[in-house]
Image 1 (cartoon, rainbow, N blue to C red):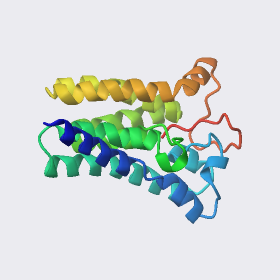
Image 2 (image 1 turned 135 degrees about the vertical axis):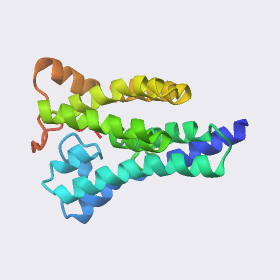
Image 3 (image 1 turned 180 degrees about the vertical axis):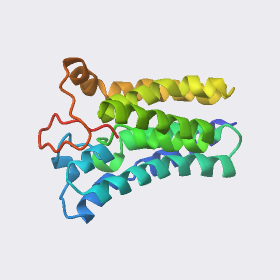
Image 4 (image 1 turned 45 degrees about the vertical axis):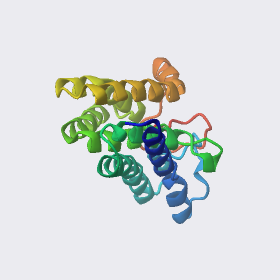
Length: 206
């Protein structure tokens, strides 16, 4: 894989990942600018705080779909291995969209979409772990952090070493983006799923 192909894959992923679906669906629902609500990030958890459940569901699906699309397009149209860089670009685009002054979401939904497109068994196991943790603790960020932490090991179990390395890198980045959530989890102050809050410190995990 040439350096040019690598850059093309990264750019493809970044452009797809940077589409701010949370902002679009929140405005479409009449709830205003998602950046002025809750944590201010554009992910589905924060969109849910508007009370517009359909907008949150649409954001979750589309944020996942853009990550999956980046991987699938790169795999189909570029040299082998390009999908890894497209996946990286997609998550970076969601976290740091140029259109929103590099202030995006926290990457969980896009990461899930990436996992599903990279290798579907892991792509199904990761959200299943998230769902199980969410049903148990009712805290979105905790559930996401548990599922994401396990993703590199799941790829290794299926002998997808390159994908495991990518998952480890993305996990570290997403953990960094959740540093405030982690502090609140330690203090026992992290909001539960469905909580509506206008506080700038409210949780937002996607």
